[in-house]
Image (cartoon, rainbow, N blue to C red; front, side):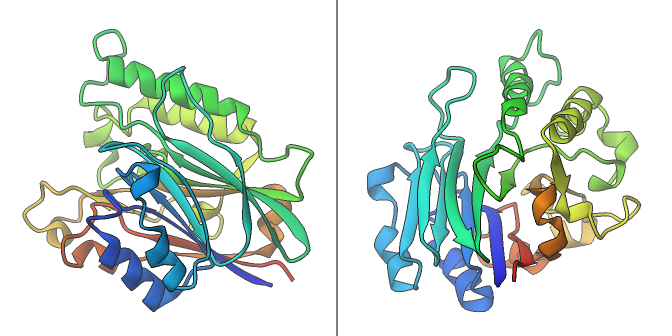
Length: 268
């Protein structure tokens, strides 16, 4: 069974709904995981997605900030909307679905950005980010209840040297500091997660999913970072085919600063 899952920090789902519709018309992924929806649950544009053939929608949102949503052609069942660090932000949603005769648990995450100062002693936002990632150790790829698991989202950390435009220049910039990247990779490995975006791509090859709004010409400067991720349990790796990063979406009208990333599987 072919299966495609997209993840995208949309930076306001109502403002950029035409972009999501374009993604659907161009690529038609089976499941779309959105982050930073900035929309309370009761105002989420569910009917628009129903009209496009996505009859199954689960949301975890709040007014003006954060928020995640999982939109699917396949039936999905909400499992959990987890609170991290005892803060009532809408940053996680997990659902369960069936594909290829398997029960799969899908996590959709939006990790805190962490502010500008990479010092947890003086920047509570950075402290929160580190604590959040630490709590993600509890999210395990093999949980004994499902045949596999997938974790996607804007995780706001570019862990590897070639996940950023300049490893040397960004070592003291939030998203690529050693305390973040080391904790991130420790958490991923301890949870048994496989980094699918790097599974078939050499660590020496640059991969970006985000380009700052501050660049006058984002494409020419190409100062990107890989902040968006797709992981899976080892049990699904044999069925993994490839990942497509839709770089061109950064140049769409009124774009998000992130672009969609689509993973494809064959679970037959």
